[in-house]
Image 1 (cartoon, rainbow, N blue to C red):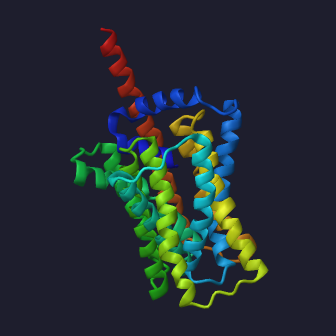
Image 2 (image 1 turned 90 degrees about the vertical axis):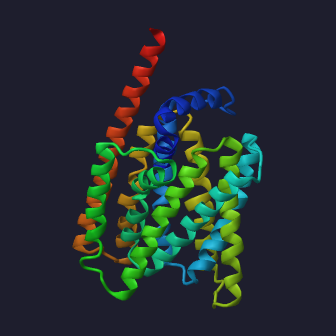
Image 3 (image 1 turned 120 degrees about the vertical axis):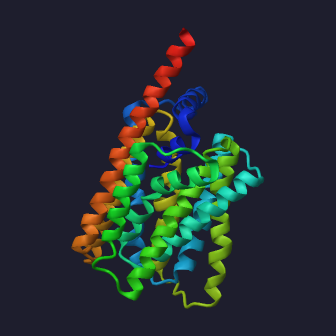
Length: 323
């Protein structure tokens, strides 16, 4: 899912730049693996991401404490990854703004999972590509394509369906938190999509660290029972739900195309409510299911169409250079 956002943020030359980056990274692989293995990495990554909702439901902590503690653990995992890959830590405008946007995504998403259903939270966050279009037009004066406008319209219909059967105060606030997570996520990809490798990696690490600094102090204001079960859940979230998936994604994107990664990552919003239903008995409402299907369908079809447009532009550019 994430690479799709980068493609749009980079504009028309996004696909060409990513292909060139894949070639450069492949020359420095620490170990060799096939494209099929990379697909397995991406599938595993999406599956691990999808466990957020059910793990949060089983952790009786304040959402801010959950976000801060999880990110502290994830930061340690990501620092090991950066050291292994030779990614340098830099602090500048790009990395800081990217970190702030990512931290906002974490905090809003955690809050949404506590205040609405997990299905609503993940699908609303998954609308981030649509907000990328809006942000790019407003801040960078990029023109909308007809397919982009259609995707925005269809996704807006899907999001509105969430509110039809869940207009209680708690659900309304949770749905707004989910939308805020999607907007923050979009800002993160627009910012990091214009950054280099060190800035991008540093922004991700800063996002974890900022979230930890903001969230952990809430330990002193809210009761936080440190039972063995609770500690196991938060460790699972920090290591397996957020930390390791970023490493797997980094490996997968070296071999898989942007379209493949974005489609494979669609496993995440589909599996999230499944885990919650199987282990917690929370069944999403009818309109939530319909709205989720509309949003996911719009994003997937838009991804296919956008990728086709990028390939056509790239082919036209290559042909023009040959002439």
